[in-house]
Length: 117
Image (cartoon, rainbow, N blue to C red; front, side, top):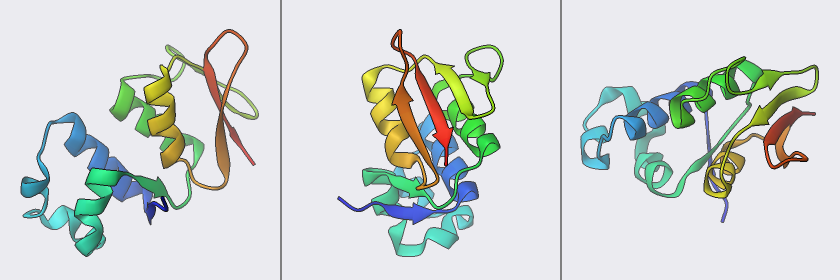
């Protein structure tokens, strides 16, 4: 399935709404999501891919989606972010979000890392 590509600000808004338990019906009424237009329902239901993900963007998404904080739950390296404690479902949901400029890999010991190209 091809996912709709959205901007980082839209991804942050979607994840905050999910975290806060907001239903799609409520989102359709908000102007904050106007940039997604008719794609909003599909993005909320099926997921999305970020158009371009930066290290700081990934940190923000990890904090909002999974409550993980830099330097407490994982470390930033020259190559990316390392030591992410994600279960398989979390890893898969985060993997689909990643833009084409980065990838999620499992490390020895079971944790994950995000590497940028």
